[in-house]
Image (tube, rainbow, N blue to C red; front, side):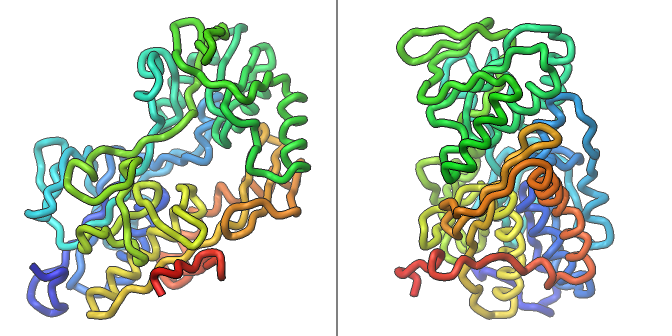
Length: 401
């Protein structure tokens, strides 16, 4: 079967994009903006909710702070892309169809798979039944309601990665009467340089957060968490930020996936087993010279844009270019008026340079708000979305040369 219809063959080439996170929405806007004046490509974006999940602000939503309600159909306005609301329940790679809500079936010629990660609530007993997560605005709002009515007690944040740090700081600042405990295998800010890490730790101390690194939560109980070794830490509320898992749909469909269930891609972001499928964001295992990328907003949006540009190259009978991306910063908010921004080498290792305090908080806010102007520009000038750090020698994969 051909990977694409030739332009002018009488039927439009159907591109179906699954998941409207930062990567999926970038793919939809970029592709739709480029083909808007053509009649030979149809772009359809599928997502379970109409509301865009602003993941970079979920720790704020969780403490009841107001954030914008962004509508995916409104973000797509003017591009010509179609939006379909529904849960993806199956992908049939042979028939090139996707089942939505077990009721509707959508056909495609090219698929962009962007069903990203959620909190891994299955790995540790009790998480599913007793812990809160930040998988979406609704989950965060449920937690906000619980924190608002608490009045006192202990909140355990399980997971000392960036989400855990931002959440612990936000809760401690918003609710100083609560005892906030941050637990994790690693010290907070472990990937930062020593001075930036020390600043982050002192900010958590100032906010009254009790930090315990080098511990592992083995069970979540209704009123406590249990650590490896048998110790229990009392908890009125547990927020789980330790580890993510991706949708099992890719593996179930027969796509080649890695040990974490992410779609394994070639250099151009096509599935290595099914080249008519592109994978983007944290749904994809994308190899660079420094290893497999980890999903963030800063890398997710470029993967979506690159997939869109690659699809157009394939439709023109040209080879898609390899995707290359180099990291450049790790911004971490520490409440509303403080932050630390660690600047990085393309392989995500820390540079000596970092920002702290109000300047860093303003920097973080600018980064968090940057997708909207980026997407608005892309609608008018699609090429404007194709600029990001390529990473130089850090991102070259020798085997691909």
